Amino acid sequence: MKVVILAGGYGTRISEESHLKPKPMIEIGDKPILWHIMKIYSSYGFNDFIICCGFKQYVIKEYFANYFRHNCDMTVDISNNSVEILDNHSENWKVTMVDTGLNTMTGGRIKRVQKYIQNEPFMLTYGDGVADINIKKLLEFHCSHGKLATITAVNPGQRFGVIEMDDFNSIHSFREKSNSDGRVINGGFMVLQPEIFDYIIDDNTIFEQYPLEKMAELNELKGFLHQGFWHCMDTQRDKQNLENMWQSGKAPWKVW
Image (cartoon, rainbow, N blue to C red):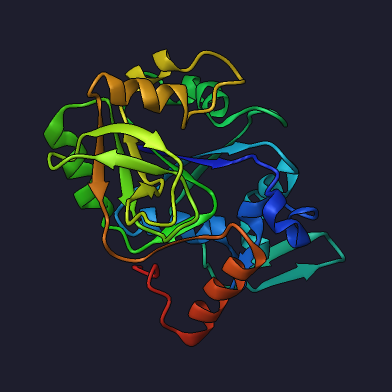
């Protein structure tokens, strides 16, 4: 099963670094947060990735095209322009990087990679959030209910719009979060049937609006409740919090 990662936005709320590189390429430790997300999936055996690129896409493409050079010791013989890799720290990954446009909305980006997914279920997440989520249990939950979409529901505090989910894990609506809420939000880490492409109109479609709202209305959307660690890198403060966890040696999302 392929894993699609949304990595094309501008990352304006963390502009201290995102003016130089796409937000998913901002580093935690010495690796892009995109790498951390891929390691989560890879630890459960999912190694086929499609990255929806946009803003400064060449940074992502260069990183993976030269993965050996970024991560391995090497000897360069300048006399004959040969390169010898001395230690192999490569991953068992297949990475497809797709130009999904500079100003395309999230739904439009997903629609643009449809030809690489074809008529198969796939996973989807954002390029700025990490969690200690059990991907195997997420997939088992999705397969058990037979609906078109599963999103992972998390409770991050008071910063995001919330989802209304009943005791049967069915999602019925989305709304803005209020200070009195203890509600859950869409934390990414989604599993989707290929029929979801029928709900995406064009490049201007925001996936979190019409497609998910319509599927919720039709009772085709379920929530996988994740009560463990989840953290997105939305601001410089978020980035520093994640960095501190990583440097402490106790990063909760490091499940590999």
